Amino acid sequence: MRNADLTPTVDPLALLRDGLSSIGALDAVGLMTSRDIRRHFLGRAEVGGVTATCLATVGLGNGEVVGRRRQARPEGFGTINLLVHVDAGLTDAGLLETLSIATEARTVAVVEAGYRPGGVGAVTGTGTDCVVAACPPGGRIAYAGLHTAVGEAIGAAVLAAVRPGAADWMAENSLLDKSAAGALS
Image (cartoon, rainbow, N blue to C red; front, side, top):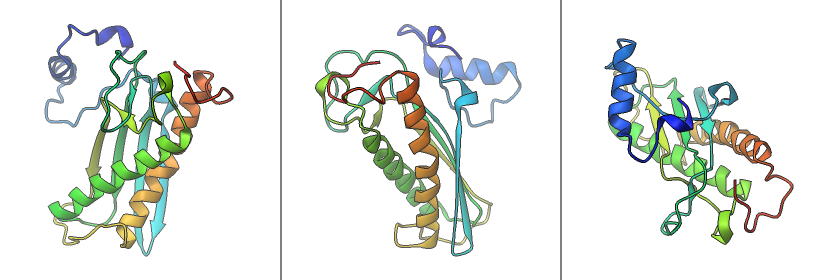
């Protein structure tokens, strides 16, 4: 997908559905990005016999600060897509905690990157971020909080993928060496 494919008049759900339909994959999980997927980042962490892996694409062009929308339409495109896999079987509750921890780790990595477009506070994510969590079926592990091996592995894997992804996006957009205040892509 390219930036030009998703203009304000395009229905993103129809675009995704049509794309999946064209390859016979309507039952697949789909994530959209205009980021060159060759610029993906993989993080992996093993803690207490549990391995978590995160595949991330990171774009910050439409970065936002949680709790305070930017009044002007963000410049550029960008989204953060995360696919998080845990090799331990989790219950639905464990998967919900996985999503929460992955989102928290994503936010930490993005805040650490220091992107501050237009003088707003540090970007905490984008308006279009998506997180998918997967694990083996039939799970019995109900707790995946920060205080568990599962939660630690998830957080470490996401940080290991999103930190270099954010740095890569910042470097590509010539923002790494500039003052964070007022920088726009």
